[in-house]
Image (tube, rainbow, N blue to C red; front, top):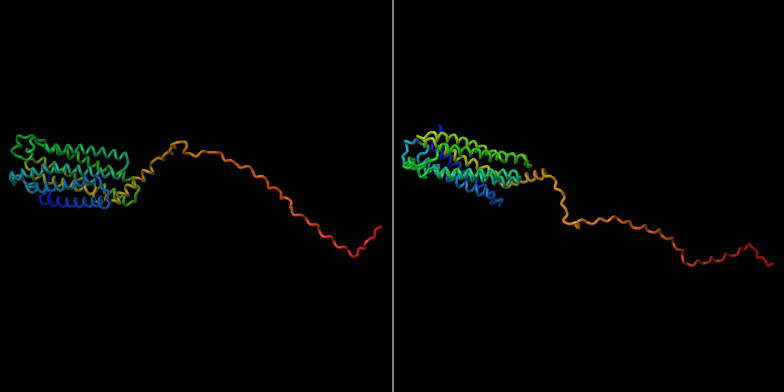
Length: 340
C-alpha cells in the first residue's frame, strides 16, 4: 500500500476498510449468537456492541464516499462539487466514528463489570466509563457544531464568512484524549487477570486477548500521525487525509475482537469462577452469627447420676417340703438285744 506522509491510495483504503468491517460484523454476529442463542445470557454490553457494529458499517460507507469523491487525490484534480461532497462525507464520518468508539468502549467496560465482581475494580470501571461518556459528548457535539453555520464545514461559499474551530487543535486534542482512554481501558483488567485461579491455558488466553487492546493504542498513535499530516497541508488536504480515514476504520475494528470472539460462555464462566474462588480464599472468616433469641440455644442441665441399685437379695429358701429318708434296713449280723 503506497503511503507517503498522510496519503494512502484510494483503492487500498476501500479494500482494507471493507475487509476489516466484514470481519468485525462476523465477529459481532458470533458473539451475539454465543451469548443470546447458546448461553441465553445477553446483556447491555451486547446491545452496545451491536450499535457499534451498525455504526462501523456507516463509517465504512462514509469512507468509501470520501474516496469516491476525491479523497486521496490532489485537490487540483477534482472538481469543487466533488470536493464539497467529500467534505460532507468527512463531516458525517467523524460524527459516526466518535459514536462508534464510545459504544465500543462502553461495551468493553460493561463486559468487565460482568466478569469481575470486586468492589474496587467496579468503582474504577464506573469512573472510567464516566470519563469516556464526558469525553465522547465533547467529541460528538464539537464536531456537530464545528462551524457556524454548520454548512460552512463543506460549503466553499460559506467558508469565508463562517467561523470554525481550529481543525488541527481540535483533532489533536481529541486524538490525544482518545489514546489515553484506550490505554486505560486496555490496562484496567490486567491486574485482575493475574488473580484468577483457573487453568494455565485459559488464563494465558485471556491475558493475550485483553492485551490485544495494545494494538488499538498503536493504531490510535498512527492515526494521530496521519492527522498531523492532514492538518499541516491545507492546500492539499484531500491528498493527505486518506490515511487518517483508513486508521479511523481500523481503530474500531481492532478494538472489537476482544469483546466479540473470545468471551464465549465457557471462558466467561471459568473467569467468574476463578474470581469467586479468589474472593472466597482472601475473605476473612466471618464471625459466628448471633442467635436471634436466647431460646434458640438448648438449656444446659448438669448430668444427673442415677442412684446405685441395691445389691441383689439372697436367694430365698426353698419352700419344697423335705421328705424324711427311708428307715435304714436292719443289719443281719447285729443280734437284737433283749430288754433288760
